[in-house]
Length: 258
Image: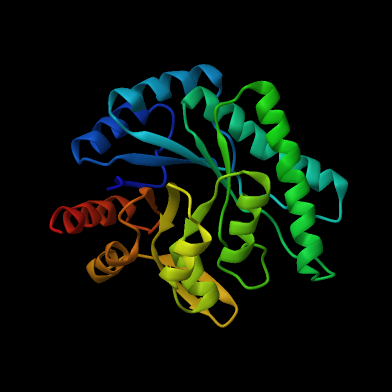
């Protein structure tokens, strides 16, 4: 049997970290994703301190890198800046002892050539993995499945990236629903045979073009998730709904009652 951990996205600021992590421990969360989505807001010393606090409170940390990333940009400067943003998260993640570094890989671009896009993103991930290895940062890159049809990040693309580069991955079930209009759990299991899964989960509103915005979860959605995810894997679930703390508590109650 594997282990399922549930926790929210977002930890608040550096000053609030100790109080928040203690509260997360009290309500039995197993993890928390630090949201560097707009900027990396802590330095090495702060990261080391928060990492120790998280370990003390038995909270596994991960990081979501800034949204301003496109590893398939036609401008070299934007590619470089994107890689630097991700690598900065890797550096701080190392000191936080946050293993998984989640990021949005990029866009298909003007040509819309999916294979060319794949190869460009693959190349940049391999380059970053070399730097991570040289720096001896104990982190893993986790490109995320994306929720809009015009954005790189289908389940097939992320699975293939992981297999061809050795990077990890983030399975976002809400994004998959928005992109594919259904969640094919059997297909996901076949594509991601790895023992450890890092996942995002929330309610979602979407159109024929994909994701519009995240919404709160219902108890039935937690039940459906637990009915369908593998029982033999270690699965970390990061809740990204607007009321993420309350939704995590409900998710834990559903899980406990199974």
